[in-house]
Image (cartoon, rainbow, N blue to C red; front, side, top):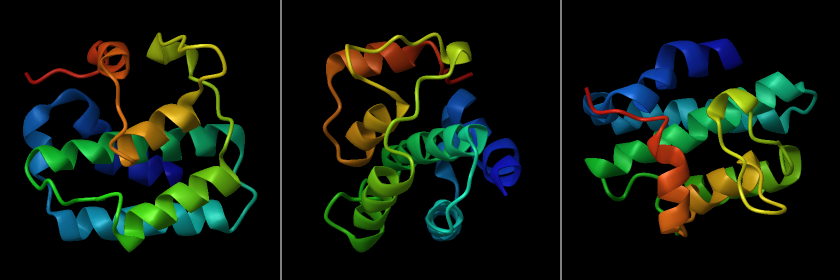
Length: 133
């Protein structure tokens, strides 16, 4: 599953701005599947990393649908609960080239985007990963 939701569905969100126009109903279903996958327990470190990256880049859909994964809605609340319970301390992958702040990690970074608590520093760290070509 993690190869599907990273490789086929959301990796493109990392690189191309126009792909953020994906159908939000489809994205909602994939988001639920990611939560189900993590909630089942047992994903390895790589699966957790790819799941968090997919959730992180899903927030780009907000560029065109600002209410997608709104922090006040049930789906966002479920994502936050799932990350906190099943993937709370996933380190930044070296390939991301992000060191983060003391005590920061990919889990907390993703949660800040989901919760709309992103700082200018977070955007600066993410800038090297995205393009709008």
